[in-house]
Image (cartoon, rainbow, N blue to C red):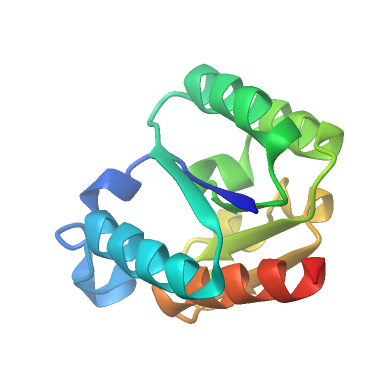
Length: 144
């Protein structure tokens, strides 16, 4: 079983970017935790991050067809990318969108509108880095 984990713009800065909002866990730490849990669950993780919309779409289109599920943190693309929405709608796998912060508690009003969420099976928001692990467990349980 293969689960794809995709991360959008600025997530490479986790751990140092606005720690009061996103915490101090780095993206590499999230990847390590996911790989460890995936090993326990008997599945494989394909993990990547891109600051470039086209590159993110290309990787999703290449990886998703052979996957059992997708975990995606689109970052700011979740509020603005209709191209990503279209890509997600095309995917033949269950999708869990993850946001580290609670987008509905953010001061910036634009963060409460998520273009990509309607293309997802479910959305986890505000549970920190643990949201990725919960998404993984859901996708594995769902497939059994």
